Length: 139
Image 1 (cartoon, rainbow, N blue to C red):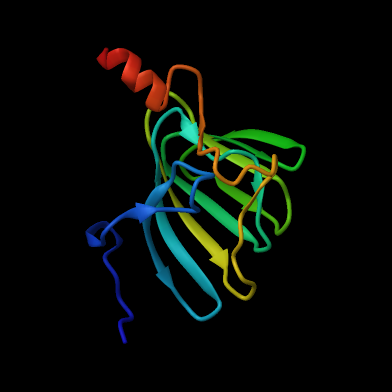
Image 2: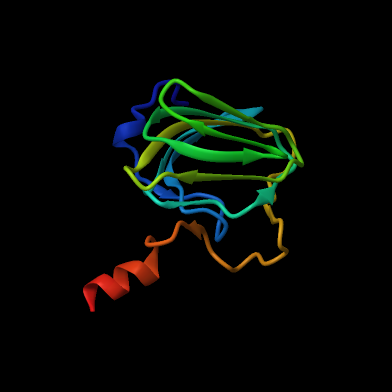
């Protein structure tokens, strides 16, 4: 069993299927998991819920977050608490990519539910960002 990890050296993968643009690494424990997440500038998660509690601790960049009815811009040193079953969205502002530490509860099966019911629509992109913006700049 391994008890020590170098998160920066681990292979990165996408998080949460089609709802978010976040990618990074994660380590699974018995009751929780922790991840180091990257969110490209101008992108993020569409409004969604999941049956587990989550914390995001911002290390770099700015995140525009909405949890329930509350909205905030959260920068380095800021913490976002997302209770279970609460609709939320988190988007990196357009200035730079965001990096944050993610801690989630594992005691309940993790199933993400898009608030609009469309599980295939993909991440949220701010105007001027995303695959369509990159294609129009290349063309």
